[in-house]
Image (cartoon, rainbow over all chains, first blue to last red; front, side, top):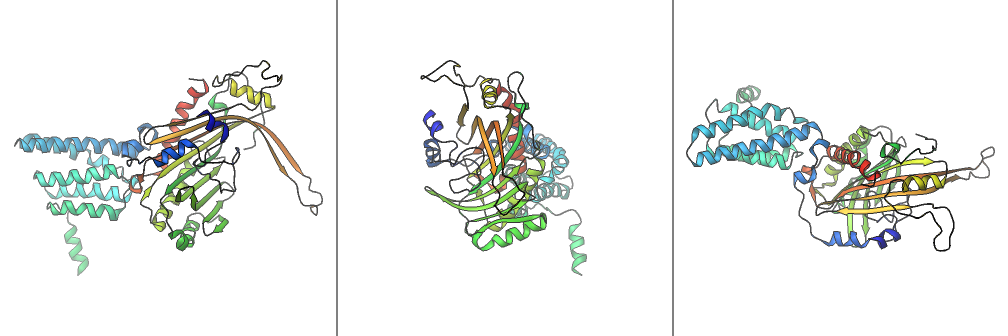
Length: 190
Length: 253
């Protein structure tokens, strides 16, 4: 390490700089690739998980901090609901899903994260509203878990990518459109 | 922005330094669409920042500046065994909160991602350079040595009796997914301009600065999907960590 430090003012893999750059910072031009950098680049690395990218929650925006925390909690509640359904305990399952429903407004408040995030949360909100008090079945709960899990891992997805994922909810016979949307759609068609 | 060199009373602290330079960069597998869509990218960027001015326009590099405060670049580069596309935002004397810098990076990244059809970043980095100027080389060197990070005897060594100048401290820390290179360096910079002979009345300029620089480059090693990445949040996080941990470094902890 000391040899690399003595010979290279900064390695070519430094942020923003390379051998071909004409603009130089305080330090001299890099001479060659450092041994550590070459070894690091040669090693295959698994993609980063969302919690590895934003590993210091206090350092990120409030919306991202809140969204990641509440989505994590919601997924845990959904897992509790699924476990309860497996044990044929509808009461515990419904209670767990009530906890999920309770944080949806706060999750929706974080929609500044992106249009895809907003569309995903909106779809879950609308699907629960359209159930009109009927508890979701196992397939529907799994579909919601699917979308929560996706948006937690990819909070900055585009609307188009999220739309592909929302088809799982529609396959589970969840209506993801706002209540009364079909009336408005018919009216616009006239 | 022009800070006068001042002597240091007591050991140097992180709060004594000023942020001079910030560079945010993302790298991806090569997107040759840069050759087709550079015009589209910059036309859209001009809609967001009407004051954008072209600095460089070549097949492998397009760079624009915003009022000499920010430089935005898209590069297609081959180095050693890798070809990559690089999107870079450089800021000169940015605010310490980096809010404007982050907002510019957010827009630029979104436009570049869309037109270059980038799906994944192979590396994300933020390099910050803080500095303080001193009246003399010795004072700049003493400031670095006051951190206790380097041990250097003031006595004669190797037959050289002389001032201790230009010390440098550099380490790299890495785990499986991310890393940081941290450098503290005391140096003398000479900035000079010699005007053409025909510019009568304009004298050559030469400015000497004895500077202590603190350069921290935080980066990721593992791939990140674009759907996972927010430049604003990532930059905020790096700033938070640098502000939190730099004082400890300066105390030699």
